[in-house]
Length: 372
Image 1 (cartoon, helix red, strand yellow):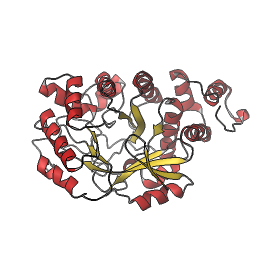
Image 2 (cartoon, rainbow, N blue to C red):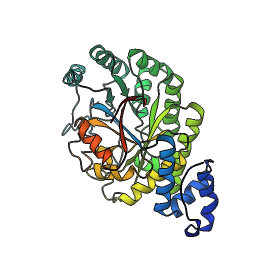
Image 3 (tube, rainbow, N blue to C red):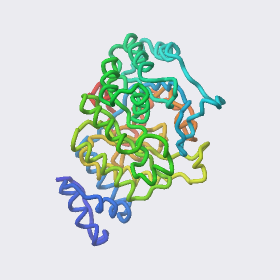
Image 4 (cartoon, one colour):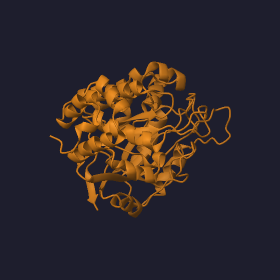
């Protein structure tokens, strides 16, 4: 039973049965999740989320030493929220690296302590499955022990379709080349109506889930994400989490859930105000409460900001991602406060310790490397 103190006198009567289920570690339904999200005081959500976080992970907060390689920001898809992508015909602020150039980026880290390379970019029509198989092989030649976390389900769907192979065949080919896991990007919001308004032309939610299920069947773990703070409603948020919870029940293959905050600079949805820190705290708390079969909730600090990340460590979060070393442009191009995202190990350790948590360096699958 979770150890927490809640004064039921201050809670609306229709929330009491839900709160009791959470305290007793019983699963709540979609309807209960929506009601809790809409009506529970933030302070109550924080208490519940923190209690669950500490039950699962004590005071430990994880991070890793990682870099990103972003092959290109040229993309065939037209996601309304994206500030990163450029069209092939309009190459202003666009890039497309060759395999040699990307390998050179990794060579710059020779002798440095990194355990993961995160390989994600736009969906370029000329960068297909066999191109990336060659890239991964080259990466593993240089750093055979590094964990390659690569390609969103959106990228994988396009690769496999162009190569005329099944998802299982394509993923097995990538795994044989050295790919170890999948990131969680491209999930956005699973609801069809919302998805059609913000990213109609890329793979649908059923395909995203199928690709991750297939990866899990091949012993390739993955992360899961959700884009929040735009046109979605609470019912869409809980529906999204519920579909992830159901797949996690089936496969157990998700490492972490990462709510991603919509940033409104330089995209087609710039007229929408960004979510407040209060909304952030509510989202992360609900994620920790609802996703009872996920071990880890991550606040991706280049997206949410360092100060907000510290705050969220009291609202269900137990992972903040990694050192990054200014190797990603996805959120800086959308107006995130960290325009050159990088933190040293000392910076991360201090950020975590300053709010009374225990920093632990992990590998990609949450094996402990060092406790600080």
